[in-house]
Image 1 (cartoon, rainbow, N blue to C red):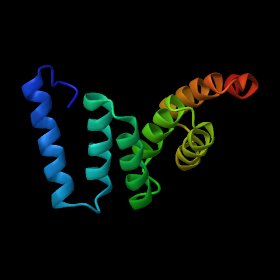
Image 2 (image 1 turned 135 degrees about the vertical axis):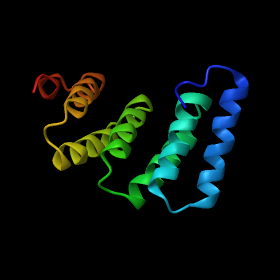
Image 3 (image 1 turned 90 degrees about the vertical axis):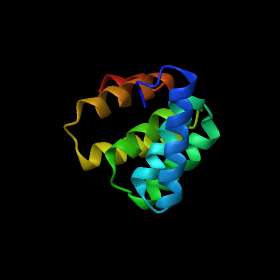
Length: 118
């Protein structure tokens, strides 16, 4: 997906992601792929949030889902959802650098500087 540089390649990624979701609508991975496609290719944030929330519902302990959901929620200004998601990810695996890095970023955006420093 991240290598799709031209319109034709991006369209192919979108079509294949749709097919994966049609084939397995209750798959957290398929919903995550749709959310990432909507985020990185289409930039449709409401669609992104919808599919991240579905992926989180289907696989509540998926760190990639919780991480990306926190990032999107921060971008949309939904700090409550962002904080909840990043805290869940950190509770599952407290040693993950990427989650700590994004938690710090989230707290800065939310103007919670003391928590960002932690």
